[in-house]
Amino acid sequence: MIHLKNKLIIAIDGPSGAGKSTLSKALASQLDYLNIDTGAMYRSVALLAQQRRINPHDESALKALCADLSIEFIRRESSERVLVNDVDVSAAIRTPEVSLLTAQVAASPAVREAMLHLQRKMGEAGGVVLEGRDIGTVVFPRADVKFFLSATAVERGRRRFEELQAQGITVDLQQTIAEVEARDAADTARTLAPLMQADDALVVDSTQLSIEEVLNKMLKIVKDKEAGLAE
Ligand code: DC
Image (cartoon, rainbow, N blue to C red; front, side):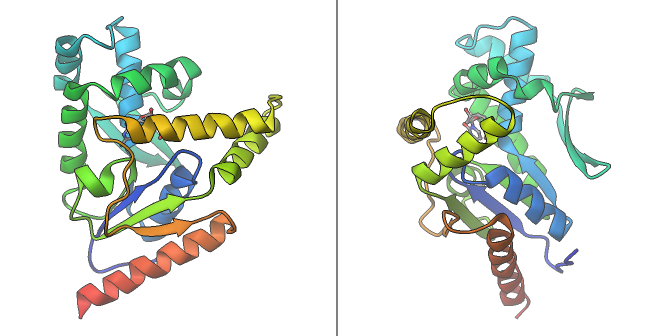
C-alpha cells in the first residue's frame, strides 16, 4: 500500500467497458483511499424507486426519495459494499431491471442535483477516488488528478463479449460491439451531465494494455502529482 501525505481527490471518467470500475477499486485500494462508485449511487436510487413503485418521470416523488436517503460505501473483508439506509444493496443494484431503470432515473434533474450534493460531501475532504461519467467536468472540476479512461469500441465490445461468454451467455461479437457504440452515443448525446472529457483530464487508452499496466501508469501519475504538491 502506498501512503500519500496529501489526501487527493481523484476523478475517473470514461465510457462503459473502459475498465473504470476495476481500476478505480484497484487504485483506491493501493492508495488506501475511499472508492466512490457514482454509478452505484444512481443504481441505488433506481432500486428504491423500483421497491416503492415510483414512476421514473415523477420528479417530486424522486426528489422526496433523495431527500431521505443515506448511501454509504464500505470495504468489508476486501470487498466493496454499498449500504442504502443501512441495508447492503451491492447485489440488488446490479440486476438487468435495475440497470434499465437507472438510465431513466439518472436523467432526472432532481436526482442528479441530490447525487451531486452527496458526492461533493463524500469527496470534499479528499482521500477519494470517484468513478463516473461527469466527475472531472461537473462534480469535482478542480479534482487534483483527472483520468479519462478510454479504449476503442471494438476492444470494449470484445471485452464485454468475453465477459458474457465466461458467464455462459452466448452473444454475437459484432452485435456486442454495435451495442457498445450505441451506448456511447446515448451517453454522449444526453443533455444532462453527458459523458464528457475534461480539458485537463489525462487520457489513458487501455486498448493495448493489461489492467496491471494501466494501474501502474495511473499510480505513477498520482505519485508525481503528490510529489509536485509537496514541493
Ligand atoms: O457505471 P454504471 O453502469 O454503474 O452506471 C449506471 C448508470 O448510471 C448508467 O446509466 C450511467 C449512469 N451514470 C451517470 O449518469 N452519471 C454518473 N456519474 C455515473 C453513472
